[in-house]
Image (tube, rainbow, N blue to C red; front, side, top):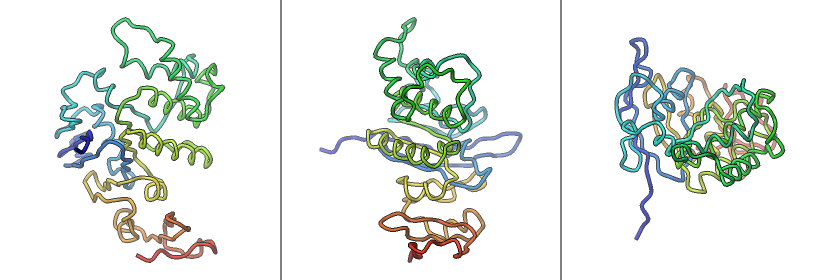
Length: 273
C-alpha cells in the first residue's frame, strides 16, 4: 500500500491591491518532499503568492488547502505549525542574540505559558550549525551582516519544524560560497520530507536545483513544468529577452541571458533541445 503524501493545494488565488489584481487565478498542487520554485520577472507576483499562502495578504480570494485543511480558517499559531517563512529582506534592530532569535521558531509549538526548554535550545543550536553559524549563538543580531542575518532567519524557520517552508529569494543576500551551501541545505530539508517553496531570480538555481517550477507573468500562471524541461523558448517568452542554455557537464546546465555566445567557456557546449 502506498503511503499518503500531504499536498498543498492552491486554487484560483487572486489578490487585489489598489484596484489592481496583483495575482489573478493562480492554481497548483505541491506534494511533500519537493522543491518548487516560483520564477518570473519583477512584478509578476512571486512574493505576493508566498505571502498569500501564508495568510499575510489583505484582500484575496481563492483557496489554500493543506492536507485537507482550509488554511484560511486556521488561527495564526496553528498556521505557523504548518508553514515557516524566510522573507526576502532581513533586518534586525533588537538586542537579542542569534540563539534567542532562532529559538523563537519553537514558539508556535509551545503550550500556553510554557517556556522554551533544553530541547528547544538544542534544536536552535543545531539549526545554527546547519546554516554555518556555529559560534554565533551569543552574537547580538543587530551586529550581523545582511547575509548572516538571512541565515539566522533561515535557522529560525528550520527550528520551527513546519512541514512546509516558504522562502522568498533565499540566496539574494548570500555570497557564492554560502549560496551553494544554502542550496544544498534546501535539498537536504526536502529530502527530510519538507515541502520547499521558494521564489527565485537565479535562473540557474531554478533549473538545476528545484524539482518543479511555477512560472508567473503579470500576476498570472504562465506555466508549470518540471525544472529540467525549461528551454530557451520558455525563458524568452517569460522574460522577453533571448537566452542560451549550455551544458556544463553531467546534468548541470547554464542559462545565459542576452543570447551572446561570447560568454561561453571552452568547456561548455550548447545544450541540444
